[in-house]
Image (cartoon, rainbow, N blue to C red):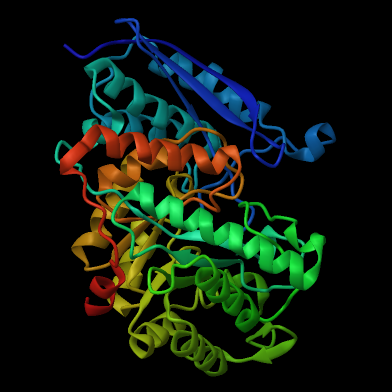
Length: 425
């Protein structure tokens, strides 16, 4: 017999930017109580599931009392007394209750909080960790794509690209990966302080440094220098999250990077130059969120991992368009972009079956909830993005991965340079 839901309760809590988000408790008749927080993005795609925000003066309009009320009212009334059967049954009920394409009536933030709390409750009731409840064979720890320099909407500097990433492919374990990434981050801090002054040590939303520079070449050069100074040359490769929609001008069909306007072909040449010069093996959102043709062009020309974030928004419908066009070869997997765990799992399955890699990702507005660490291991994704190795909302995910590695023991696999696999695919 499945345990029965006896209570559902939500509240406002604060994310890492000090803005409200939704936290949900789900209780079962066997005494289990599970909690899940809902993250929020700043650099969001227009096709994402819709957060419900209150507007008005309170919290600058970012309050979520409406979403909290949806959980404590309509969703609670519909689910309390119901057996906690499969995840898909719960998520289908949530989708049907909302009844809109983008979950805009009750709010994707309300719906996702319940979906994740239900998954946690089922695992806790069964006495197994979440990653094991979702995948009995889970054993792959993800390689972290560590965001050490921030730009774009995530920082108050003039870097147009949003993230400059170090990838510890030469580590033997997740513990060593975090160790050498931290050593690089410390070396980077010394370089920035010496070269640009102490203001360069200000950080962006995801904990990476935000120096007053504008050139992507300069930012990638700083990462290479920090890796060398830390004594880890050869152990890292490099990545970018461009979030290009945010510096794209639809009227002129151009992108402005470091003060220079470029069309699609010129942007492709810029990316290929960075690939050649800086060992960039992963580029996320290099073009506007609806430019499937541009993504396909760069995927073919570059031979590296090209990730669709705003392009796909973890939506199987948009991913199918990408698969048909061979636009990108990797899915950025953000569970709050689609609004239920089941739909997000469907997107990951579709990506894997289509030969795409999957990169599990946080949001810039994170909480201390480490759930994506379990989800990354459950998916066997082999890659995770959760920011710099600093600040509690980021380190919570890394620390959870350390615990999972300890639980898995000798069966744990750290895949290392997964990007040779992505390139071959």
